[in-house]
Length: 247
Image (spheres, rainbow, N blue to C red):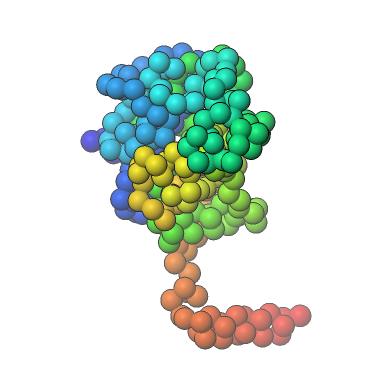
């Protein structure tokens, strides 16, 4: 096991039950990594990396619509026509299923040939995404870290199916951190990949330095979280009174 990269070392303080995973989209074969020993779905690859395995995948390694979302293939007519979802009970009819393919985030065709995965302690590349499985208390810290220095809002986007598009592709193309609750996505729930009720957080590379810096500066457990309802109210009242005196 290698040490966590220095610029991400603060994440060790969270003591996550599963390791954070770095993901990178590549046009050339990554060095120092091997392909997985078996074919996997896109979401299963995250779990494989959480177990401590570093690897890369090509379009032949997927057993789902991952290559379509990654722009590795021209299309998947059976899926894109909406025929699969109704058979699974996700949608009432093909037209409802078909609609999601009009706005599912996808990468441009032929721009990515390989996807690299590595747990935090085995990263040998600069990740395009850092994906974290957190409990609610841990996730709340990341929500505050996102806005601590900017005041920007947080949001969560997804669809009933093809949750991998919002976990991997949306944060990468939008530059926005995204989240989902484990148990929401049909495929991930069916595969029983994650403990129910946790939060999957996907952070793009350009947001990561800001969030890490804010984690280093801010209080993870503000005093108000320890005071109880009345204690918090009194603290707010005291602060407001003091500020009014300064007017």
